[in-house]
Length: 328
Ligand code: ACO
Image (cartoon, rainbow, N blue to C red; front, side, top):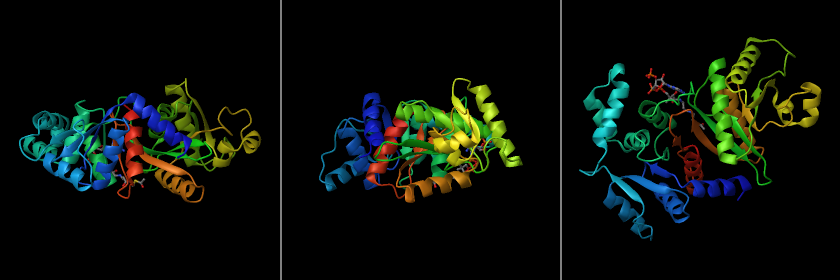
């Protein structure tokens, strides 16, 4: 395993947050839950029918560990249904949601899990092995909402290599065309996430198709504005831009294109100007660059409620749960 992932598990074990899984009907989720529990990486909570979860464990040849908490919403075991529905109704009534509609939504495991996170019954949530990204994000946005200091929810990836390199890319998953203020917010959330997950200082590169003032275009101007906003909001963080990717990454090129920059040539957090660029870049880095892509790590929510790819492996689910646990 690469050093970042080993370290991620160690950090999660030290934090030992409680993490709820909304999709207990999926065998990958149950196997990941068992691994997380057995390895002491987090306190596992599952939403679903108690008897069917226990039966699935037995079918797989495992005893059901009694320390795993099941939130049984199949009959009268849904202890927090009223509180979660009240919470959702209060948040959404001015958008036209009725109390009955809130109750019906909260009977869905995905929304119930988001509610447990919102109310602080558990520290973090993970879903998306079965549901689409849109479904998971909608439950997170409506039930939990954005963090106080974030204007937008976004999705980053940690790109890591066996040799030890670890980068963050954002936004790769959620928000198509951010304005300058939103881009600054995405960058701040990504820097925070990078430091929480790696323990290292973030050096943030605002990427563009030009470096500094080498060209003029409204899209480059947006990046200048985003950097200015970021520096005003976070004078303690290291950032520079606009930078081309090569100037951000390669020291020799940095000395020619951005002499004196504190970030060029040594960036570890790469902020793409839009979702097209971020999504394409992480896939190229993964497929041609041989990186392990961990994510999307959903950031900017008031509490962590993380998405999975529907193609996620057991290892992916474990890593995502560890990442979510560390964002608490
Ligand atoms: N950040 C903050 N607030 C947001 C965001 C965001 N990114 N997106 C929506 N909101 C707000 C909405 O404006 C709305 O505000 P309101 O309180 O005024 O109603 C509120 O959150 C609730 O939004 P919804 O109406 O429930 O959701 P919406 O229809 O806006 O859809 C969603 C949001 C689900 C994130 C949508 O933009 C989406 O599906 N994005 C694409 C995700 C995706 O499929 N990514 C690609 C796959 S991932 C990958 O490849 C790695």
